[in-house]
Length: 453
Image (cartoon, rainbow, N blue to C red; front, top):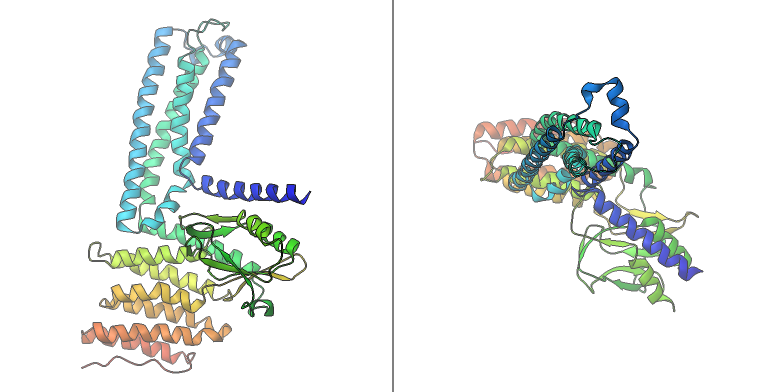
């Protein structure tokens, strides 16, 4: 019985991973809508065999097309027009994705593709085309009670008008999608949502003692090369309970693993270790897309990369970097509520799975270091980074262990400013901001001022 349950659980996990991948692809909603229109075409043809057009003609004769040549002309025109509209729309999508990759960061492309509104519009185009083609080949079918499915042709005209209306909406939507404010807002919302989910599951600071001694544990090696993105937590917890083991990931989720390299340890070795390993790897997902909906760290990375790209000489858009820093400030404020340990517990409250996890200090270094490197000669970037520190200082009294981290972040910003900014006026502005930080009396020691000649 157990041998049957294990493969079923593995299949369930694989279905979950495949569903997550498919839902985030550009063709998911488009395909569903297209299939729906194909079903609508078959339904309309069935109703035509029951005399739908005759009944409608008795009450609303202007809605029924009775001339075969007119019907064929209308349907062929609709087909040609919708194909042109679809090609033009898909071309616009590809241009938008290419521009986003060039101007912002290639990592934002998955989030742009996952916009449901654009997928639905493209699905409407393809669905209308499929509906029209199905109706067109049945214009002179001998099995109808009437010689022409007139009402179905009229419905194709209505769908075409709907496509034209949504084309205007699509133009507006795609022009909004490419704006950096929209991209950053989208990444921020997804990342913030994922952070809130992690906070709800957080049980406070402190690593259970069971994870502090891993020297004699059994090592697990990666079965393939790729990014360890996610795992079916419920299924893995159940496996750990069945084998009465504790699992610890030495690499954070989202890390790149080489085949054969160790990445996790199990609390004890037993005779069924091979069986345990096979079951466990059936619930682990390896793929290369960095989705903030799977790991909030990716959201921080995407916003940071957009800021760094904006500060590059080829783009030279400090305004985008300023907005990115503001979003980072909001996300850091949320991250402060999350402890640096990540542990999963079973239904009995026993710690079963532990993760090596990025601390708040690691995250701030990952995000702020590249922005400091590329923006240290711009006083507005320096001032905005100090503004980020000031915003977080209002919340740090609840998390006193983060005071040294914020002090170090501000000190590094000032160190770069000391070396890169020579204008006395800019240095005085920075000093005024530093004096504001020191006047808050929150940090354990005062930040140094820049020297002004």
